[in-house]
Length: 273
Image (cartoon, rainbow, N blue to C red; front, side, top):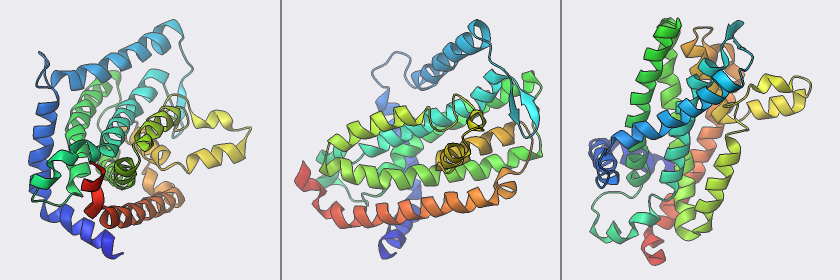
């Protein structure tokens, strides 16, 4: 618990620095490209266009039920796709955030725990932009802004907490054992098909045990929260309060483990250079 409090204080006390470094990270990563930061938008946009071409034209999928309302498959996919991109990119970049910057550790005068934070925030700005584009698309599709959009703030915060907690663990382990980053990359690719991003988990209704197990995935909780916000069906975090308790319980455990590991090993990170 002491380690968790220490890490929390470091995030709060250095929040201004986190924002400044995250903007620098976003710019420096794309400085050698002619289009610069625009690639952060173009890459996910191209991916979603491919999904639209496949599932919206070549192989039209059946509408998906969200809160009792039938939603065309492409819009159902769009509601969660950019969240997945944010989660994937932030988790991958966060896992290697410390060991890829070991050479600059000796010149640092700020806590190492903010390194995963500013890397995640650099992806968060892109997510907010893509989220805005998604909302605009939904206005033209007839899914207008409604009172349920307010819960997006809650689910965005929940996503940041989940990603940061995971990154604390993976960034520490990846610094000690480089193979962890490669293993994480493969695991996340598999998670794309196990989190209800590309297909509705309700298809497993004939296998209730497997379906309920998949619903315990904390990422699934955030994905469904995004969808119910966009399509205005319910206050998901209240209606499904049991999943809310499970989600924050998982995040708390991950954060406590990650904070303890980070504080214990960060004095020795430079030894792994």
